[in-house]
Length: 89
Ligand code: FES
Image 1 (cartoon, rainbow, N blue to C red):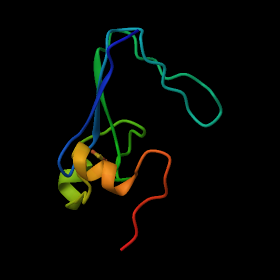
Image 2 (cartoon, rainbow, N blue to C red):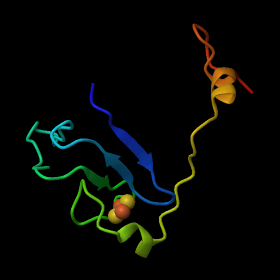
Image 3 (cartoon, rainbow, N blue to C red):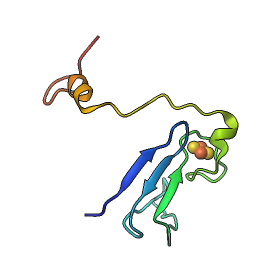
């Protein structure tokens, strides 16, 4: 199994790191983007890139602020208990 790592960059893109050829990126029509030679690339999540789906650095010019952060395992279990409904309140 390929070792793929996706990192949310603070107030920036999703950084994808994977061995070359182990990730396929397709558009809404199923057409593949050419990732030849790439072992890492960044995907825009601010919506401002003119080179979507890739990040072009526009996020820093428009002051994009992402609010989310990974929830620690203990907190995640409380929010999404195994076999149960998410906690309320
Ligand atoms: S996240 Fe970088 S341009 Fe959108």
